[in-house]
Image (cartoon, helix red, strand yellow):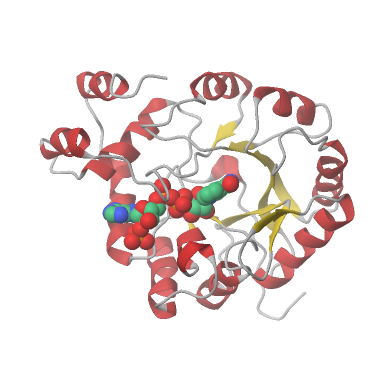
Amino acid sequence: MIPGYRPVVKHLTDVSRMGYGAMQLAGPHVFGPPADPEEAKRVLVRALDLGVDHIDTSDFYGPFVTNEIIREALHPYDRDLCIVTKVGARRDDEGNWLPDFEPESIRRQVHDNLGRLGTDRLGGVNLRLMDPSADFRAQWEVLAELQSEGLIGDLGLSEVTAEHVATAQEIAPVACVQNQFNIAQRGDDPLIASLAEQGVLYVPYFPLGGFTPFDTTELDRIGASYDATGRQVALAWLLQHSPNILLIPGTSSVAHLEENVAARDLVLSDEDVAALDSLHPA
Ligand SMILES: NC(=O)c1ccc[n+]([C@@H]2O[C@H](COP(=O)([O-])OP(=O)(O)OC[C@H]3O[C@@H](n4cnc5c(N)ncnc54)[C@H](OP(=O)(O)O)[C@@H]3O)[C@@H](O)[C@H]2O)c1
C-alpha cells in the first residue's frame, strides 16, 4: 500500500446523481494538455467541494491528460469518491481514436488507469465498444476477472444496445450503460426504460450536446421562470426523465461547473416537463 493512500471505494449505486465528466479538461479535440491547467485542477477541487462524488474519465482523454490532472488535483482520494474510467480504445499520435480491444490490452489498460490515477481500485470501468458488431465477450470476461480480483468496483458498457447488455449480463452484472442521450437526442428512450426495470444505471454522455451544443432558446424561456439557464433546464429534465439516470456534464470552467451542479436542485413542474418532452420526442 502506498503511504498516505486511501482506497477509492464508493460504488456507482451510492453516488449522488450529479457527477462530473472530465473529458473537457484535456486540450482542444480532447488532445494534449489544457490551455489552463490550474483552472482544470480548480474545477476538480470545486466539484468535490460542491458534493460531486462521481468523476468520469479515461486514459483516452489527452491521452492520459485528464487522469494525470485528476491525480495532481485530488490524490490522495477521499473514500467517498467514485472514479469511473473507460477502456477499449486508444489515441494515435495525430489524436485519432482507434479500437484497442484485445483481451490482454483490456487488462493492460485497466492497470494503466490504476497506475496513472495512483490507486489500487477503480470505482468503475466502462467497456467502450468502438465496433458495435464486435464480439466483446472475451473483453467483458477479462473485466469480470479484474473485478473479482478487487481492482474494479462496478462494470459498465458504453455505446451499446439492449442486446449487448443482455449478452454481458450472462457473464457479469452490468452496473451502468453510458450512451449519447440528451433532450435533443432521445434515441435511447426505450433502452433507458428497460434498464430502469433491470436496476441498471444510465449515464448519458453529451448531456449538453457535447461538441454540437443544442439550441437552448425554448429551454431558456422555460428556465426564466425558475431563474435558471437553459442548460440547467436540460440537466434537470434529464434527472426527472428517469430515476436510473446519473449525470456527468463536462466543463473546463469553474463557473460552468457551479451552474451545472446547481441544476440538481431545480425541480421542473409536470407541465414544463411535458412541454420539454414534446420538443424532441423519442
Ligand atoms: N462513453 C463515451 O463514448 C463518451 C463520449 C463523450 C463523452 N463522454 C463523457 O461524458 C462527459 C460529458 O460529455 P461532454 O463533456 O463531452 O459534453 P457535455 O457535457 O454535453 O458538454 C460539454 C460542453 O458544454 C460546455 N458547457 C458545459 N457547461 C456549460 C455551461 N454551464 N454553460 C455553457 N457551456 C457549458 C463545455 O464548454 P466549457 O468547457 O467552456 O464549459 C463543453 O463544450 C465527458 O466529460 C466524458 O467524461 C463519454
